[in-house]
Image 1 (cartoon, rainbow, N blue to C red):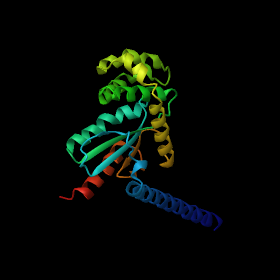
Image 2 (image 1 turned 180 degrees about the vertical axis):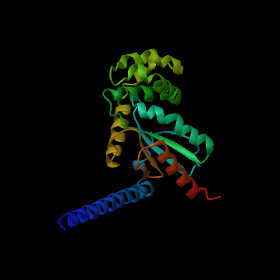
Image 3 (image 1 turned 135 degrees about the vertical axis):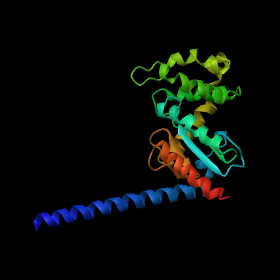
Image 4 (image 1 turned 90 degrees about the vertical axis):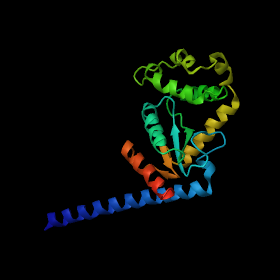
Length: 217
């Protein structure tokens, strides 16, 4: 009888935990969805780099780090979904440079933006990441040898990356990441709804859900 009661108690506690976890995630999604409408700047700042139509009804906000391997892996995946839904999705990149020295990589990227080479530079960074951002043997200085492949003026980047305005925008993005409880990269939100369970399939399902809701026909 004692073991039966113990087993029953364990089952009850398990279901309570599952319910509480589900309720919390639902509350989080509702909270962030509300913030997307009432406090859109938490998700999209004036300085944020975007890709896609301004008329798009589905916004993917990604908190990223140029030194993040998973960010590099998800980049072509997200772009593929965007190509499959032309004009319906807008990508917004935010910074969460959590890796050591990643602030400098963001500064290089923002400096390249001044030359109109933002996406080209990010593409080069991701493709060469294994050579300069390896977790087992990081060699950040090696990134300079790859940047010319983006068609940028490297010396101008060395100068422009020290602009205090870039440091301020990084601070703002980190503050917004903290507000939104982003603890690792990439951190995704789709129309303000956080990606609760991380994965390719889960992100695609969240995006498709928002597409169906906003483009019913």
